[in-house]
Image (cartoon, rainbow, N blue to C red; front, side):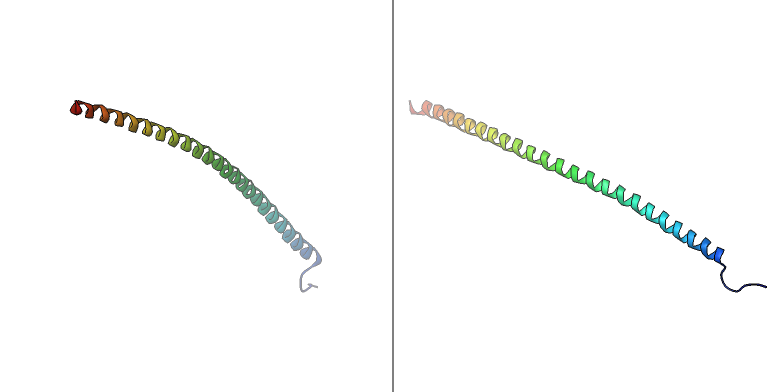
Length: 92
């Protein structure tokens, strides 16, 4: 006599298969999310480091501009003195 439908052992087998598949998929997803979270944290650290470097570069650029302005002022003064000396030749 054959039974129609699913037997109890088949039902348990299918249930275990589905449960293990779900647990395996959950574990895989969990591992990938963890990996992505670590990459995001590394990117945040990298961005913070870039901000610090950019701030330091801006400070350096300001100092360079101060030096350039001081040099430009010195050159302008020297040029003015040279022009004054050149004019003295013609005044005498």
